[in-house]
Length: 291
Image (cartoon, rainbow, N blue to C red):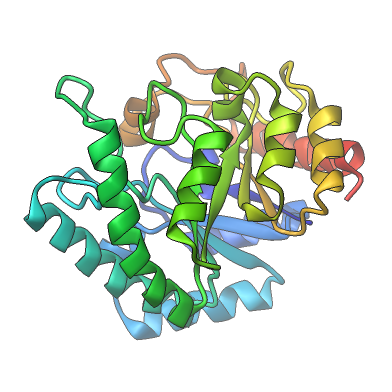
């Protein structure tokens, strides 16, 4: 298993100098850096820039993975054909870019949009059916580009289509593509799953990507989640993918607002302290998971 961390742990905005974070996570001993596809729309826009990031990651001995929360205007499950068209155009443009960057995992609530607007009537069954239909088409491009689409299972406050692993199993089985898999996140699982380890076992070889974080989104080892049981379940299914920490610990900025972090979660937000906690969490996970 490869261990990673999301760059946004250290920043308040979705746009960042990814080389800086490649330097950092490589020095801390991680195998993987996860980036946001938002930056591929507005910051890293040329073929030359994408190749440069790919080569820099290789120099640092890092694997890159990607995450994205589609906007409401680009929504694969929308009743609005224009929103679906924009979503398909965006993803079909994005996937070759990820292929060029040697990125083989794209995770998130790709089947819907984020943050979800709960003031409107979200038609779960109708939206789910549209998502399945459109992802069957998008999966063809994903297969051509060898990018796995990770269907992230979200808690009830952030999503409504896939809240449990069981729902995700049915969803990806209905799509029926080798490149559409389940993405689990321990923060969301802590809210929705009766037994987190059993959910991981239920996912089995459908598990394509994994996010790690405590019940309050601190780095692993700083809270109360059953990490030993989680590690045993990952060993039981012989999980060989990436386990990427996704902690959010500081208020402010776009990230703090959208993730709903209304207070600083740790007493020391200096870069040195954040680095120290990240490195400690990496050592903790490697020890407890044993893989």
